[in-house]
Image (cartoon, rainbow, N blue to C red; front, side):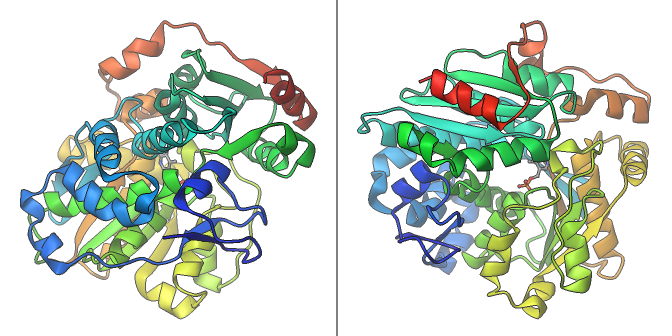
Length: 432
Ligand SMILES: *Cc1c(COP(=O)(O)O)cnc(C)c1O
């Protein structure tokens, strides 16, 4: 199976080349040439399958022969070695907890899977691959952790100064080895622009193999489809119509959910819940896509004004707005509404949600106003302690710090400050 570029100018490539390149030479995102539904028997046998077995069946077609089955199985054993529990918090409302991985962010699965694939592919490459990634919060930590110590791969992470939480900053600045953190004097959009400039810089590209570990990379994006399968395995109410509400920023996670649906997973509807960065909610109202600069919020991993994966979603629906509307609703919520939701969930059920999960909860409740008999699952994408100040202040209780986080709390932050693209380029060229 090959991947084509959504800009339609670049040649098709294998999974391996799509992973190594990150983005196509014509600057388009790669998209799988085909999506073959899994047999019905697969979904019937679900209860008897392990996460690794489900993962292998679902992901194999996308990896094709580029990774042998035995290696792919071993990769999935390692990547999926933690829990993905469903917790019911109200009648007809459950949360899928995706934060039990090493950095307590849902990005752990994608980041680790991509790191393992790239590590496998770079075994027969002569030169090193440099992974360049911009983060508004959680990507950096998950990528740093996933790639730590992977041979033949160097990682450079750009993050906006003062705009990620203390814990997030520690997770991406304290590891060392093949990981370097660059603190940018600017916003997340500035970081993302600098990364994009690097990918367009022929002078740089001649000198090094650069790739992206943002969710534009198919190896980061596609494994996220497994969450939706794991949720289905865990829900007891399989006879009800299932709705997923996904707190969305770059729209990689929700787009992966739609791929799971194309594989045959019975999903009634998707809800894309956002903070005030409402480019997609507005698109779903007006049919006009108007990217904007991002606004800082308490759910900072979703502060994205021009979501990079939305083009993949539109492509899945062949740019048919009416067809997309049948399957997707999208709502935006303010920080004030998010705080109130965190408090309401806590008071009603004792459950502590993080700001991203709370946005997902709000989106689900809004959808269920008119469809109360659906079974709703909102994704909890980060552990609440990663947003300690906001959560503790809102619910008026102190949270217990899990061991994964405690490990980084007293380590020294190491980063290089940069102001502009020239400084990034200079760093990349000097660091070879
Ligand atoms: C990255 C992230 C999101 C958004 O995911 P996308 O795939 O970019 O839409 C939501 N919540 C948390 C905690 C994240 O880290």
